[in-house]
Image: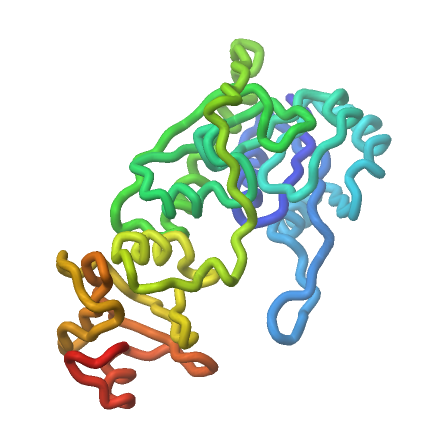
Length: 299
């Protein structure tokens, strides 16, 4: 039975951890995760999902602010592998030297190194993405590739749809890699093909009604957070691509029973649900009626 130290924090990591725990060929001997954080308006101190699963399975949990300070603890645990999934801290070389460290990154590396690979694939309108099992080094997602599992991105998928699919793939991939590690040949990444993506900010959700395709791509990438919103602050919560053509930006082209068609300089979008600034979400029909807007007005 191989001994595993698992490092991760969000739901993505939790699903991978559960998959490893479920396989009797492996024993998770410790979990490292980020410290509990205040969540919501009431700032309730909340443990990461990974911690909850670890406690439920009676696995020791460590939550260092700086992982480097735990290198002796990790060394004394004497793991066969260190598995990392969205942990949020860089592993120092002295930790990497303890055991093979495998990271599960949600892109086809070296494409989309960094913090937001799933969003970036949707923003760019990619037809496929995947999960890369990578042998870690001290760089940011620069380690040698052990194995990649790809998936087609369906046109109607939003962020959560793709996130869930990649999470499922990552759980299966790590078991495959751990069981066949000795037979895998690490392949160096091609640096000339590398691209990087940063952390998503709330301001990234601000849109202009210029290109309908770009608006829809942002909607898919930024739902549920940070959502897409106009200069006025109104969020567009449910939209899809409308008819083709060149229109006046923001002009109401059609008003239907459950939706409205809004023009962009390039093509149009159909809107079903919105959330005005500082108000609850509502159907676009209710919003239109309240504002007494009609065809030809600017939304």
